[in-house]
Image (tube, rainbow, N blue to C red; front, side, top):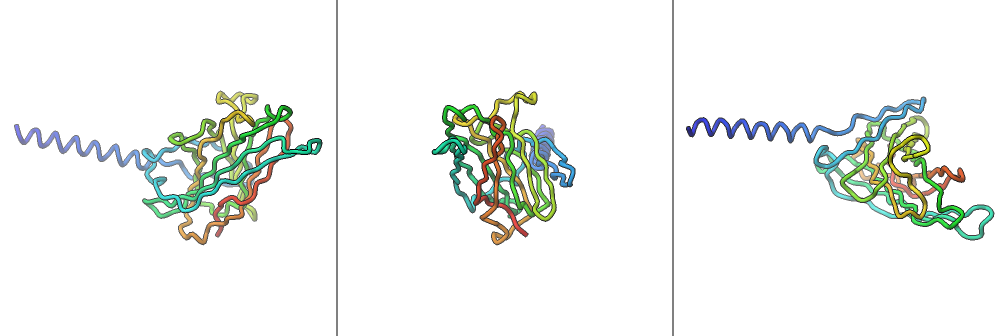
Length: 220
């Protein structure tokens, strides 16, 4: 009887270990890069499923932005972007996080939607991209494309009901913000962090672009 119980216990422990290993390995595939705007779906990724993203925050800042229409004397829209770098406890590699919060829109611009986020000078090419459903935020990115070259660019599309997406749009003044967008790199040295990266927020309604400086991005 004791032998049978012991065998069953070993089998159960092996099954648990196998499931944990499988969960730890469930990280997104490498993001493709080319010059053809090759869009891929941005998957949800949690620390439970992908143990690589567990880590410590080593850099974090919130950058305010605003935009004033040429016909307006004061900013029509305002908000902030949070940019963060996390060092993986498992691999010591650096992961770059971004969250967009368009907090205010006056009566003329309140219905404007942010449809695309663009990051510039993202130099490390060994990356994958995902978003964190297990953190703050309500708007999940839909797809992304990485264009490598002299100034590597990552474009991230947000939901657009006008294009058939089921998720709600990111409106100025709605109180919504994106979920954390995370991009994994192979960089490990803190000297590989450029603190002057650029981000563009492209709007759908009035078709203007807001440029934000001071993003954390990786450099070679």
